[in-house]
Image 1 (spheres, rainbow, N blue to C red):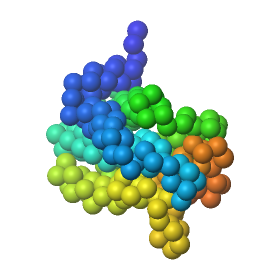
Image 2: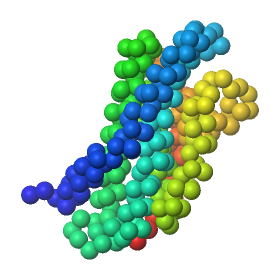
Image 3: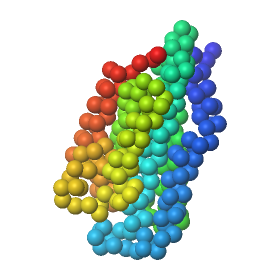
Length: 247
């Protein structure tokens, strides 16, 4: 017999698979951005300022983070706040399948979508543009898992503090652009130096960008960057737990 939680997760998976717009932004958009950037000749030129790497090499980790941003800020909070506003979470509390099952299902389906997007981006970068595969696989895996954890923490925190779906959209947009900037979507983090770079490194995606780039280049991520991501993850999930309302 299928447990209520498993049934809810299956349902959420089927519903998510029908959300073509969400799938586009999480899975396809990062790859399309990488292709567009890779077609710019200057992005394929080696630059001594970046350790003789090319801009397109730097943008592979950036587009990996971009899929996390899209999932955690643009799609997951909108779905969950919509469920709460329409009373789905409250009604689910009267059934064997508790509201937490939907939260778990949303986290899982978005994590799987992000993982699929990341795999496509890394393979695409390697096959089409010859970007090197991560040289430190262990370091990349640790950095990736922490980046995903902190991203989901951002998403659940936005959901927790947003009383309505419209409020969730507003909070999401306020958070979205700073996250895009610190992740290096507009300009890779490596182009900054001094105080600006130090400040960015204390943000969740700034630390994630540093860690993924270090691992891609062959060194284990700096413990400071891992600690920043870990700290933000704890804080964000504590906010989510304390502020989250089911109805």
